[in-house]
Image 1 (cartoon, rainbow, N blue to C red):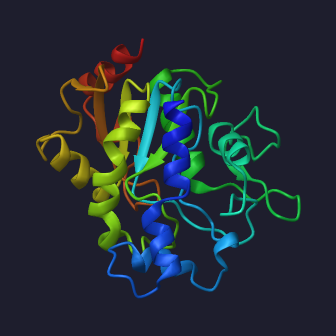
Image 2 (image 1 turned 180 degrees about the horizontal axis):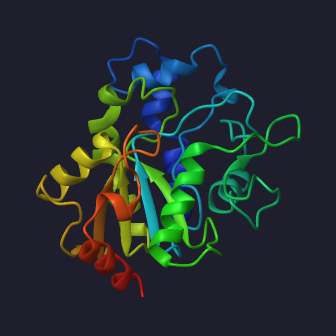
Length: 249
């Protein structure tokens, strides 16, 4: 019940609705919401609460905000609650449609599938690295969420909306998640998490932190699109990587 309530609240975020109904609203989310201003409200691509079975997955990947694609078969404001619940919880498999195949190719409006999405391919590799097995299952072995839930390109509007979205949803999403290890991707998400949980900026992984009556470890990596090393093996000390793996066992 808690999962359905939070999912529905994020998908039909009152801040997004206010900005759509009043484009001049003095709301910090205005810029990111107005990125889709050319669309009628019922065709607005909804904020993305998470992707995957967040109440089961032992690993959660956390980044800045979801990218938008106009040709993707993706929930809009006029989808029913049961449809959006199916999509976001079973996006990687087990839903009423095969929304994503191979953990990295999304279903398009024309019924075909996209090419490989670099971000999804990269997080799958990071999950393989942590779990030390090739047969990882996207959506059940790991889920994904963001600091800011509204969609845009190149983080447009994220800086302005970040504080409000974090204060409204971040802790509640992390409390709902069962993830033992939360992998924070990119500089923006890293800064938010380090600030929220008082984690030293010098650390690549955190000490154990209790969130929602569960002990968690945060690990920090560059964004999958960064022009630098992005793997745990390259970015962490060997003892840090082993600590994460042991925590997951």
